[in-house]
Every structure is written in structure tokens, then in C-alpha cells.
Amino acid sequence: MLQFTVPQFIDVEDKIIGPITTRQFIILLAAGIFVAICYKIFDFSLFLFIAILNFMISGIFAFAKINGQSFHFFILNFIQTFKRPSLRVWSQINSDKNVEYKTEAQQQKQLAAPVVRRYSTSRLAELSLIVDTKGSYKEEAGVNEIKIEKRD
Image (cartoon, rainbow, N blue to C red):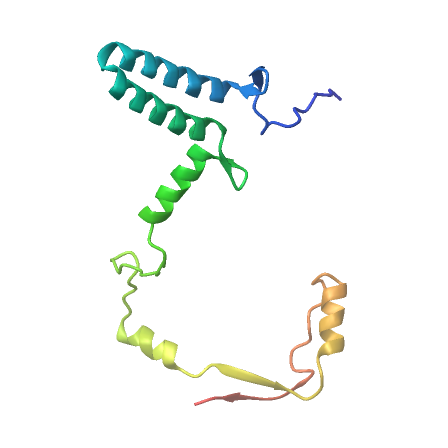
């Protein structure tokens, strides 16, 4: 039989630069590129405001964890929670597939009282025998029956 190595700790991200993972590095790299573009486009006061705001937001997305999940997964779950209704109510839409049409004869047949069998003794021993023999023993008709009556 072939033996394969099973990967361990698949939920742990790979570290590339010290304690920084690939995802964190890419987020910080994108933030740095955005700040560099802002430096060329805007004047210094607006650039400084955008850079501080950008690094704060990218730092939160890169390093923050809430309840053990990354911040971007938390935000996505938060948005999904508000998009879905908080109370789910089941309502079946009736269509031709779901509706069953019956004739009067079928309705009368369904309304007819079922036959109820009454037994004189406990059937526990007989049922135990049926279970023990895995169904090969069949009960004998009329052995324990008192009478058969129709319920109205």
C-alpha cells in the first residue's frame, strides 16, 4: 500500500519576510504603490492625509484578526449577514408540480376507514423472534387476532 505524506497546518499562511505572510506583503506592497502614485499626483498636505489613511486601512486589512479570522473575511461575512434576512420563513410556492389532483372516487377511497387489528396477547415475543431471525420468520395469520373491525 502506498503511503503519502499528509499536509499539516494547511490553515497557516507561509511566511516570506520575517513574520510577514504573502497576503500581508501583497497588501502592504499595493498600499506602497498607491502612496507613491499619490506623491506624484497630489500636493504634500493632501498626499500626507491620503498616505496616513491608506497605511491605516491597509495595516488593518493586513494584520488585524477578529475572532481568529482575517479582517477581509470578517468584512465579507459582516456584509453577507446584512444582505440576508435575519428571519427565514419557509413558504412553498404552489405549482402544478406540487398540487395533486384527485377524483371523487380516490377521495372516497381515502376517506374510507382503515382496518384496525386487535390482538389478544402481547406481540413482544413474536416481534423479537422476527427481529432475531432477520425477517425470515413470518407471523402466522390469525394466531393472536381477536377480531377485525372497521373504524368509522
